[in-house]
Image: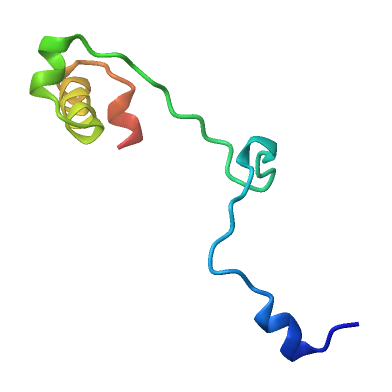
Length: 72
């Protein structure tokens, strides 16, 4: 059996893990993001998801009787 000093020297500087065998973390919060594909002309205006979300929230706030008002 190896002693503690020997096992410390056995550490490699880099490890290559095979993530194809990884399993989903069952303790992680179950929240699935929705992916939406934007047309090219729209994607030129909205550079990231934050910009799209801001615009959609503004639209929802402007809509009368929107359930979004109740959540904010």
